[in-house]
Structure formats: structure tokens, C-alpha cells
Length: 337
Figure 1 (tube, helix red, strand yellow):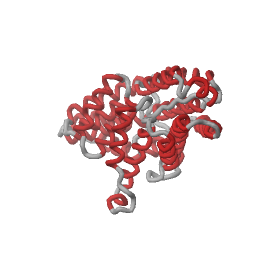
Figure 2 (tube, helix red, strand yellow):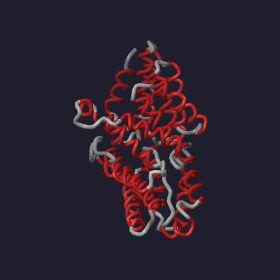
Figure 3 (cartoon, one colour):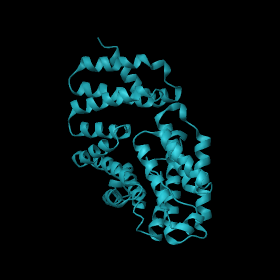
């Protein structure tokens, strides 16, 4: 599942009481961090998160923003893996949210549940991706409980539908045969509706919800419904590689293999400009090699596969283990004459 790339902001109970929740200045900071993250400007996003934490050290939003930025960095570069720092930030979010929930009004409670739901979702995602714990069906269950409780507190906080929609759609999708057999409820249609609502009405997550909705439509077998969403996001965030990954997948699913190869080639060049993400580089070379084979271009496939030799010795052991099948495939193709 695609990594869940979301960002939330709330003020402290003190700030909420004084100026309403959330404060306009805090809301604008949240949007700014979101724009930076979607456009791969991680250091700029980190700077805004630091301003948020200095504004109020007990504000759980500042820690969550910092955790979201760190998550984006960890996905971007192997050497950025910092589990102790990541866990500390998420634990702090949950501790401070519990403190605010003791005395706040219903609207503030809705935002607090949004914060805690996202922190819990990130924790589960971390365990599944890097920690070897949990499974796809259980990812985000604790977070989903918070999203529901937030909606019960104030269902006008439309950003809650982003988290709930992701959970409903992807839990059903990843259930696979269990869902089709009726063992796990199939909530994909409901998830699509929830994501659509957040994409239209969300204050914080609107563009994140649009990206998630585009990915959901692709998974649902309707790449044409994804295309306009992804193209619009690419125009808005031209440096966002996560958007490029999705655009390439959409083009491939639509059968436009030549355009997909062009997007993957562009993506590979961008990855090389920020060295250190060998996971992405292996994925890109493997996918391009497969695309050339499907396009009956065996010579191009061999050329692409042989590029792995340039960085094979630099790939960290953990990445080699995780992508051993892809690396083995590239090495086999590279040996062809």
C-alpha cells in the first residue's frame, strides 16, 4: 500500500481556547508543510514543523508534522532511517492528544482524534514496512477508531474522511479473497466516497486525498478515472516523485507503455539527483526492463538491466534482501547477448 503521505496541524488547548480551533496562522502552516511534502521539499517542510514546535512545545501537531517529514525522508533515503526519533515523535503526539481531550470542546476533539489517528496509522505502517510487525489487514485499525470517534464529535471536519477513506478502501482491497468470500466486509465503494468527500471539502488533506483517490481508482481497475487527478497534481507539484510514480503506473495500466517508460525514465533521473534511495532505483530499473520486454524491445531491456552494475555494490544489505527477486531478474537480463 502505498505509503499514506498525510499531514495534520492543531493548536494546543490554550491556543484553541483563545482563538478558536485551529488558528488561521496554524492552518496556513499546515498547508505550507503539506505543499512542501508533496513537492519533495523535505528540508523546507522540516523548518516549518520546527516553527510549529517552537510556537508551542505541547502542541501535538508540531510533533506529528515532524514525524510526517521524517517518514517522507525515511522513504526517500535509506540512510535517513531513524526509528528512535520517529517513535518518540509519535508517542509524544499521543500523550499530548490525551491531555487535550480531557478538557476540550467537540470540534477540538475531532481534530485531536485526527491527529492521534494519523499518528497511530503511521506507527502501524512503520511496523509493517520496516519493523516486520503486523499485517496489511490490521494496519491502521487503531487509527480508524480515532477517525470514527472524530466524526462522531464533529462530522464537519472533512479531513477525517481522508483517513477513514484510506482505511476503508485499502483494508478491503488488501483482504483479497477474504473480502470476496464475505469474511472481511468489502468497503471499497464507501472508501471511494469518503476519499471523494475529503478531496472536495478537506481543509488540510484535500490534495493528499486527491492523490489517494487517484491511487484507489487505479487499484479499482479504472485508470482513466485516475488520469485527470494525477495530471492536475503533477502540474501543481512538478517535483513530487510520488506523483510521478503514480502517473507512470496509470499510463502503464491504460496500455500506454511508451509514455509510461518516458515517465519512469524521468523519475530515474530525479532519483539519481538525490543519491541514497536504492530501493527506488532498483524498482525503477526493474519496471523499465519489464516495460521494454512487454514492448518487444529486448535490446533496450538489456541496456536497462546492465545499469544495475553501476550501483550494485552500494546497495545496503537490507535493501538487497528486500529486493532480491528484482535484483536477480535484472542480473539475468543483463547477462543476455
